[in-house]
Image (cartoon, rainbow, N blue to C red):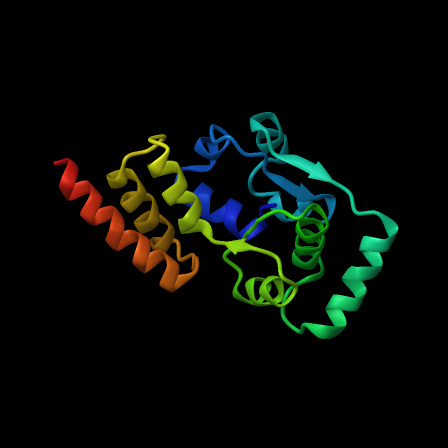
Length: 163
């Protein structure tokens, strides 16, 4: 599962097309399509982004979670519910959604983790990872700070080893 924040971060970092070369399936819920208006959804769909609907029980779970968590939006919670039901990783940079995911025992990763995955699969260089992260920061976008700092430091070291 991937949330809107991560898709926008990757778009800002000019890496959105690259993620669809990974051996992964990226899925959103139909609740968040409207949040991707600035990025034409048809383009994302043709790249490989998949959309799934929640079943009635999962929709009820959204309402229940909205009562427990103040910050994540209805749309964000929908992606969390789908990740939980599919027992898969949720990729998000939204701090409130990350906390809700952890509380619901859903494995959660951030934007920089995905950039790191691209670099480690040699789909981008470590220099490109650093540049993408810097572009994301200039927008300003706010992927998980600690995760990104640690990974950026590793990218710099790995890039120096390759020079």
